[in-house]
Length: 291
Image 1 (tube, rainbow, N blue to C red):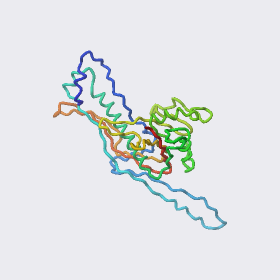
Image 2: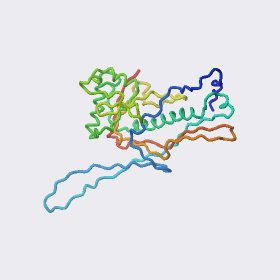
Image 3: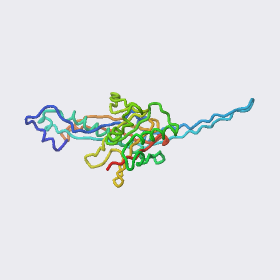
Image 4: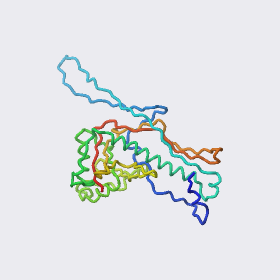
């Protein structure tokens, strides 16, 4: 149980509880997901390229011998939990257990996103868009957006509505100041086009733009996009949904158990999963400078 819950004892206290502002997951449903209950590792198959050939009359057909490979990732176990004391919970005007489920679920959602971000950052052979494109030491701009789009185009990555561009909120605000991005002469921003599953999605020129904050956790760790503290470069990530995989041994689950020895309920949200880059040709990184 939170040690500061005595601050919420009933003293002219409103019954509605204000959750501290925090983001949950942003990327679920935007990557290739595979669930293998009980597995220590999850494999994603990769099917190689075929080749069209010519054939003379009566010649034997030469098989392509298309190469089959796979990418695997080891599972990681994660949880977020807290106790609710039976006596203290009776002294406040709300049920702490219900609020804990909300708060802990958002914490777990941020960790899911971090696993995906780490997999993108580990794709060392992916294309990198330089921080000076569109202006020296610049943040996100239309030129960088076009370069990210072009990098996937030139690599033969399909433009089938499954491309994602992940950036922080500051980069998106910088992009909105570029007249070429906001002008309908270049492209049309589909405002408020998110879905009920992910209302944060902002489609534009074949990309689903997703924005997140820096996600500084209580322990000071940073779960947002990678940032170099020396160069002030923050990396935005562009990828095709099939280029990034999330394997689940156990999907997100929440439970509340009464622990007699503690005279308290234990609220827990947990999952077992990990992410991996399946095809690095479908990933592009954009360097954005933010002092």
